[in-house]
Image (spheres, rainbow, N blue to C red):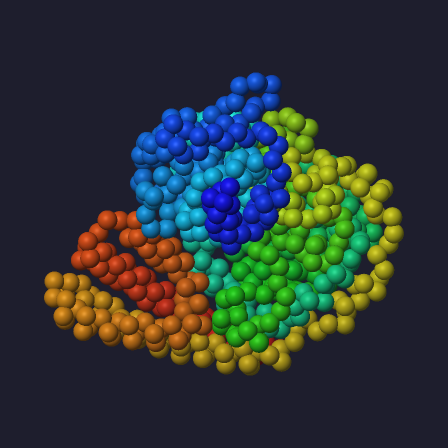
Length: 635
């Protein structure tokens, strides 16, 4: 018993440091006699579990020599470039310990195990403290999507560098349904992470350019702070452009003033054409085509636009009404935290996500979605008559109809089409992109109180965490009182074109240009020394003498943290390449000279990318400076 207590305390001390909630659950778990610990022939513990409806216990490890069995299992796992190994089943942890001893660098394991009594037995009998203490062993015990996303978020990038599913056959047999369900959730999570990472890297430069060009408007308009809890207790309706909206779009007019209507940018003009002026419109798309959704609007005064700074600057140039731009780290790096201080919202993949976060920020309850299909309802992608159809119109003729364009939009994604269920339980097609949006939505919904989100789309993909309801029923139940007009009085009281801070903003941009030039010169010197070092690897004395200058230059660059943040935001690909190279080097079996050569190759590539990124950042800030000049001289 003393030995058992010592092992348990050592394991649990490590677990309490790395996963407090799980450690508490295990510590409080009562013995239900479903787990049987026995002594194997070699003298170490083995384990069996009692299955419902069976009199015979099922063994998860060998009754003769579980440690040797675990070693053979671990040896059968191909250890390649993967940084993540997802293992179905914990058992007593022998196989985890054996596999963990083979991993190199920062490679880590995720273990899926629903049986808390089994986990407690493992903590009591097998010393796993080194594995748990390393923070490279993540234990997942449930299929709650929000919990999984939260637990894995720090490891998302590493998972994208390579993840491998590994089956522990006895554990699979004991909890087959759970293991299948959580494997699907993890696969979905990796799809979501991959799409997010690809988008971030691919769009980093155009995103930073948009943010920089929006800085004059950023400083001229009031932040969203005035909206915090402003509509607490009043319902909100988030209107998207999915095909199911045609069932409810005309009903929205009668709900104006009884619910806060938040429109995504793609449906804004369509609502105006039907005489419905939404209270808010959200926008975040970086593409220049986004401005087409606002062209031709004569009066923006009745709608408050909430925009992420990365939105194409042409949109904000067109919109002359109330605009609030959210906080942003790149804007803060350029302007300084004091000048750029304002509230922000969680980063959303789409304007519909942004609309949800805005409704939560304003205190709205409940939050109802309409037109949010996230799939191809009735074999179409968009609501008839939306602005995207206007963009297609020049291509149409008697042989090429809107319906054909819609079908073409769906078929173009046939390689990534996914079959799922709609709100009625019928099959519906979505694509990988929309599916990743669904993953983020369901994680967001899970974090909100039950019942706060209503899906009144009346079509589209089933969304976990929502209450499915017709819009008419939602209106009858929740839209029972008018929103006081005084709630909207801030629109006429705030100055939506305050140019008093533009001069200070321009001065900050000029300073950043000087900082960029200084950093570029330092990096040029760093690159020259690194290339020189590559030729000195066989001369250790000279190598060590020259590397001192690299250390000094590295310290100088670290002192330029604000400038580095800007360049890093522009050069996301460089950051990803360095992250990948670091992990590969850590996992390799290089001797000292080979390792140093790989590290130099990594550093040279990274510094070259930073120099190139600094040049792009300078171009962006020069263009931003011209935007400030234009804004300051505008009548």
